[in-house]
Length: 73
Image (cartoon, rainbow, N blue to C red):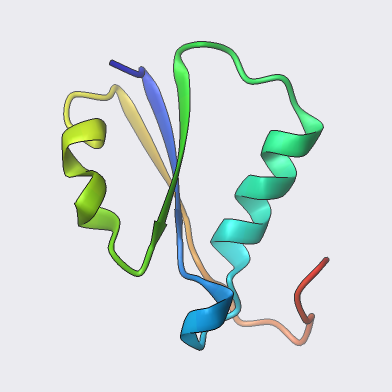
């Protein structure tokens, strides 16, 4: 079981800005992830990951924001 779960919400093909997914991909590319950290892409169905989230110590949600910036920040 992961101590910390980063759960990205939203998806650029589902009419939101996809910020959560974009941020998580950037995080995974730029940093070496320690074992107690689990990265998940929830898209528009975050509860599909309930069994992987249950019991974690920290759950960090990465969600959409209102911005004038287009994808690929």
